[in-house]
Structure formats: structure tokens, C-alpha cells
Length: 264
Image (cartoon, rainbow, N blue to C red; front, side, top):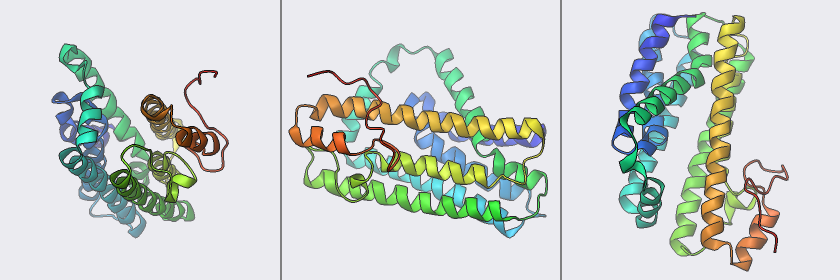
């Protein structure tokens, strides 16, 4: 299983998401991106003497993904007062949160980040030959990063022009949470990249558990976002029409709501 190497990756992830002790949402935001990028750096360092081109590409994509995400979140928090208010509301109960609870979250997300990236780790640890799955997975990751970056850009532009309405143009015509969809797509690509490299039940279990958990996290994030948006814009006819015709998370899949809707 490579427990020694996995422990090193866990330490890297744990150190890089420690800012969550200052504000616990950072465990799953800024710290999340830094941890993924840090694991990518650690993997290149760890297996530097036997690197294959596809392994280098996958690690570089983890770095680009992680540093872009963390950089975007930091800049948004510094510049956007609306996001600062949302962050304060989300962490309003943090003062009473016991240190033990934060420590449990810290350990949990550390394990999650190692599991999420394990397909790349095991491709390198098992010295698996390059195959089509690895390159297909890398290609999906590239598309996902572009999609997520474009979604963040379009949302920022539209909210600047019309702060009293959700983004509805560009990628947001197809799906209400294209950034979360980009996240799911990235981790789908990384999971696929492990096909043909993962060996044994334990390795498959770790990779599959990491993938399923992060997909569940994204669905939960979309659900919480929908709840906030319903509270802010729910009385607007334009918003009601938009959510009734636009899938919330997966394009072309007719799933429009993740929260129960009040009957009118």
C-alpha cells in the first residue's frame, strides 16, 4: 500500500491546510487547493528518479488546479465585500466550536485529500506503464480546469454588473453551478487516470472512496448554495424561471433542486 509514502503526503496536506484552525472553512477552501498542489509537488519530488511524461503532466495539473483555486479564493475574499459577508455568515458559529472538532475536521480532510490524489500516487508507486486511461484522465482534468476558471470569471463579471441576481449567462445557461461541475470533472479525470495502475482491493478502495466523497462534498456545496440563493432571490420571477429550466449541477441531467421546494 505504500503506507510510509502516504504518511508523507498526509503530513504535507495537513501542514498546508492548517489555516483552517483560524477559520474552519479554510480546511475545505484555501487549504484544500494548497494541499492538492502540495501533494503534486511532493509526488514529483518523491518519485523524481523514475518519472514518466504522463506522471509529470498529472502532477503539474494538480498544482495548477490547487494553486489557481486557492489564489482565486484569496483574491475574492480580499476584494469582494459580498463574499466577505457570506463567509462571516457561514462561520458565525465558529467561536463556540471546540478545538477537538476542528482537529477532527483537519484529520478528516487530510485523509480525504490523500485518498483523492491516490490514483496518481499509485500510478507512480506501482511504476505502472503509461496507458490511454492516464492520458484521457489528464485531458479531462485540463478541460475541467478551463471550465472552472471560465465559470469563476463569468460569475465575477456578471455579479459586478448585476449584484442583485445570480449569474445566468455563458456557462450558467447550461448549469447553475458550473464551477462545482468543473470540480467533479477534474476529480473524475484524476480517478480515470488510475485505471490500469491501481492494483488490489485496498488501492481501489482508497481511490474510489476519495472520489465518491469529493463528489458528495460538491453536491453538498451546491445544495447549500441553492439554499442561500433561494433566501436572497427566491421572490424574483426571473430567478424562479431560471432555476426551473436550468439543472443545478450536471448539464443535461434534469436535476433542478437539491433542497425541498415550498409549494405555492
